[in-house]
Image 1 (spheres, rainbow, N blue to C red):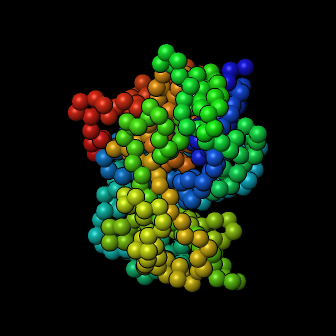
Image 2 (image 1 turned 120 degrees about the horizontal axis):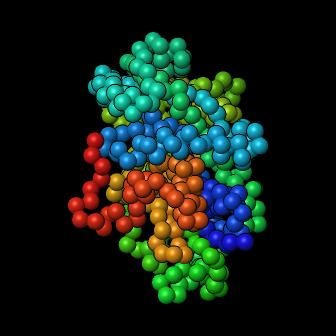
Image 3 (image 1 turned 180 degrees about the vertical axis):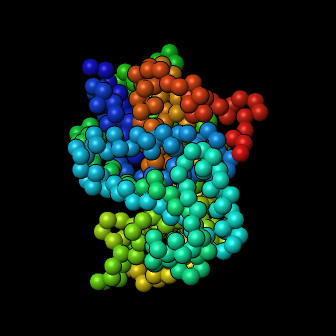
Length: 374
């Protein structure tokens, strides 16, 4: 049986490990603190339409294809019980807080529909019919019926359960290399662990030989809210908003709670930002006033691994090592596709040339390499 070591137990490392196990590999995952990074606090929006932004053409098809693969991943993990992994096929509503926001939303909707995504402009009255909790400031919106959600904590818990003893809480500090080929990893205590293939899914963790990767920490503040005692859930579907040009989202959970997020900052501060939390609550109450009646369960901040073009880095580094990182804010959404591609590379299966080029770890080394045009 072929063996693989996966370094990193976030959503990408866990789904990649599970995919390889499904294909008959002997897999070991090393991480001193599994699911303690961005995957632990992520909102879990499976939103290929509402995550579309200008200037990322190579990312659009990846998001759409990965969302298409989610049902199969959920079925394999949950044995037909999607609630076990926190999957909710609830829709998404994107609303505008003023007329300038509505104009920006209309322009983005044109891009979404040009890509073949379902995005329907609706009036403020229609928006309130869908979500009565919306406030009077809302001037219109877009209905995205195919943008759903999953609870990353539930999903990762199931993955950890399925992988069981294969997940080892130890830190990897280096690689076993001979003749330019990786043959395993070195643990913090100096012990070597050998494998046929090594897969690096460490997010922002820098290991020897990977210092040149153009990854940057993009921090985000995120809140978890609970309804007031005895109060009904505020929302029935994900509500995203533009408030004076700033993005905010509220993701309802099956238990009535809400995930409110998220800021985007590159200040290297791992603690939640007071300004960021205030801004999130203020923007949220403008579109859903009832947010001010909730209780704060948790305030978190985590760093997401960003790349210069916001597209992941996935590819083969040497005959024994594959890397899969840099998923930025799309790690949960891209997990099915990212894990499939990574597993395909491990097994030397054929991968679409355009996809490989878009994810190529060396694409930033090429002269005149720039992020995608609109």
